[in-house]
Amino acid sequence: MEFALKLKLQTDDLIAGCLAGNRVSQKELYELFFGKMMAVCMRYARDRDEAKDLLNEGFLKAFTNLHKYKPERSLESWIRRIMINNAIDHYRKNKKHKNHTDIDVVYDHGEQESVHANLAAQEILKLIQKLSPSYRTCFSLYVLEGFTHKEIGEKLGISEGTSKSNLSKARVKLQKMIRDAQLDIR
Image 1 (cartoon, rainbow, N blue to C red):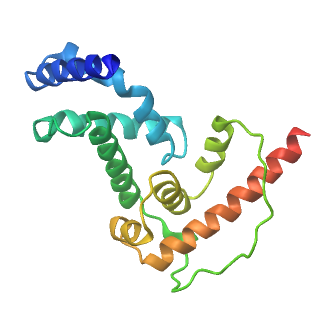
Image 2: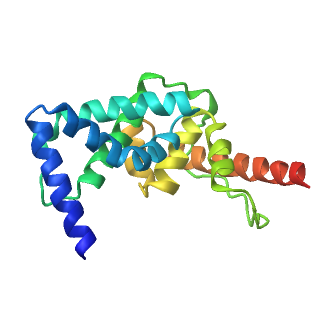
């Protein structure tokens, strides 16, 4: 409990400094959340450079809108939401829907064989980054962030069925990439 209180006091001081335009406070806030927010951005980007761009754009939006932050909310979750929305905006700007099909009902692939991956988290992230932008974004929003298909459709300007289709195809592609990666390890 003591750690949580120290973190709250630290972030309160940093927020006050950032609102006053203090560059040192901005740098400290950036460094405090860099790792966690970079991990969020990596889920939506095709590589580390694109993730850094998303991260920096997201922090710029956070600093610009810090006056809208409500202290009763977690600062980390507020910044996280900005990062996710920034990634969605980036996706919309670069929308390439070559790899999706608009359907009402997703094709059921039946019982998939269980894939027991012994791949490290970084290796799995690299595989996710190899997915097309539409598959990667739907997969990340649904699996990693917990959005519903309806919410994903509204955010990305696609139908709920398209979101389901993109997720289904992303899972199939990831399973194949994981199996292939495991074969390469042996």
